[in-house]
Length: 98
Image (cartoon, rainbow, N blue to C red; front, side):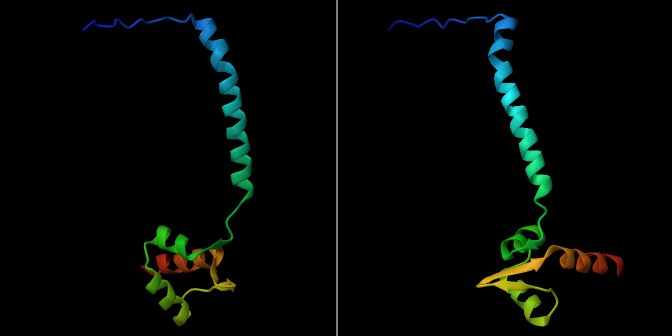
């Protein structure tokens, strides 16, 4: 069995820069677009999955809070939406009571 030798090629810095510069520029453009897009899209409503992920509460707890009037909500069809501002107010109020 013959052993293959690996070869290493060294690319001069100028050539490497020439190859990577267009990629760098494209990534910078994408980053700028993403920053602009994310800053414009302020989330106005949470959905059930958001409440579960952000606050670690179960589906049953969310339903209980809705039924008891503990959290405000609106619906579109079968989708429950919770106003971010109102949830933030509830959290701030609860934080101050400690």
